[in-house]
Length: 89
Image 1 (tube, one colour):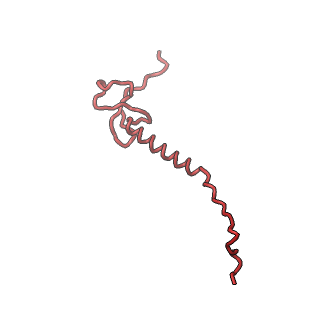
Image 2: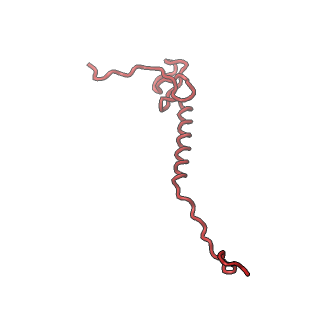
Image 3: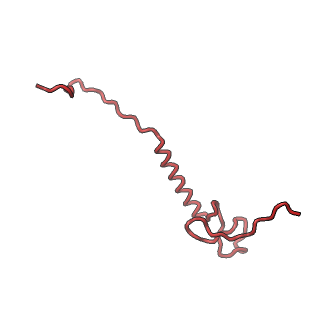
């Protein structure tokens, strides 16, 4: 008696935005005509690549936000300039 049952061969709709029919990447296209291979995240390769690019951009934006601000330039007082609190007579 088998300890487990194999998952049924199912054709799924791509979880991305394209809505194409996908099959397991281990199955041949001749067995499932009109389908494309699932890549990851239950998506086809183009949709998964698009999601990866969006995630990379979000991570880069978060990394930039976490960087400390650049140091302010230190102002060197000009000895020839009048002081701000003194009034020239």
